[in-house]
Image (cartoon, rainbow, N blue to C red; front, side, top):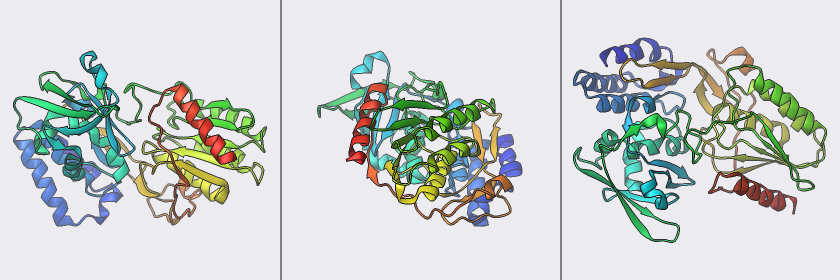
Length: 391
């Protein structure tokens, strides 16, 4: 673990521009805490201290991702809106799936969330995305003052009918964290979900055209570009048709490859409205995609959903390093983005600097949160939005 900390001190802290604003004394205090936990060989304490250190800049792209290195209780909690819900559990607890989490060992969820804030990087919405793994990680529950490191853990839940139920579990019943909580949390019921295509287009007739963009991350470097080209042609063929673009759960990738689709959408009729669906699981390049569209379309674009996972000013690019102790991953940043004020600095790559525009703020036009992520519910949800915006 000392070696892991040395990697971070040598590679990340000097190079990640998000740490520039952190006072040296404060940074040094946290490094000393991480070093003490490393020497004590307490892996959970080490990871949590490291999470707190890397969360100091408040930049969500810079953080420790412990998922591959820890074991958790077999429950998948996800924040839907502002409510933490159970979306996955062993068959013995299937009847509780969908319920709202009220407390853990008698401690209210709201109090636990406050205690967890210092360990989580980024905005309030990003913390709601990445925070629920702490609710099933026994080591974290100890640090959060919820669990004493022995005995059982009790989850109190409220079912949709209002009935209160209780799940009691032994900490021996654990699974790998990454089996329930993906590195890039998408908010889907199925933790192992991954997009089967980069673009899905659905024709709702006179209501409009739905364009679903689940991800901009393409290791092949060709599939996304090909899909964008196909979608751009389809959009250009319907210049007067209302559009609904869905980037919920899109955790990012390369926005540069989506520019042809942005051009096609922007070229539509001046009286055509374009709706964009966003949520707290919309991150990084997907936020930039929305920002550029808003800059191009102005009042023609209607933003629908909930506040996205990051703001418009952040540090990104960079990469990841694997820590040798247990397999945790550190995500770090290398480049400044400011899509609010249109600013750049020496760290902003040229190809991004050329696209930077000043958007100001991205305020929601309509707050709508979908409770279910199945296809039938999604289509019904989209029809309701088409009807409301067409009326």
